[in-house]
Image (cartoon, rainbow, N blue to C red; front, side, top):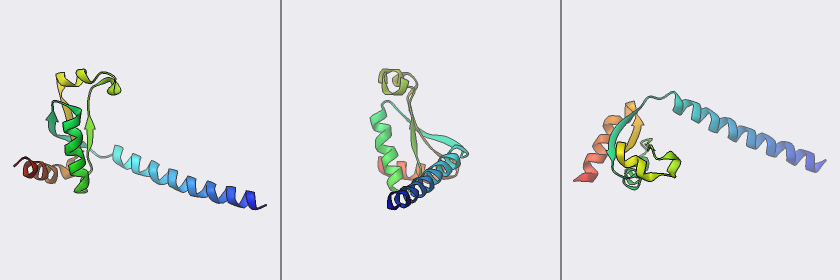
Length: 100
């Protein structure tokens, strides 16, 4: 009996967590992401991505590197730092301040 109650409780918790994550992913996919900067390596893009996220600006890195298996592919087209369109100006200001 107790096992069944615990199982149902855990199921409800995991289901709520999953539904919250799914809603967040759907919301992120409906946002228009724009490139604010291009980098020669993923490491440099990740540093600025972390900077933007620390300022509560959503950011993601996009690299054409075969899922990380061929990082040399990304050097041809560069590694892009993306932010939601409505956060682009704020992100650019943060990046400009960090360069100086």
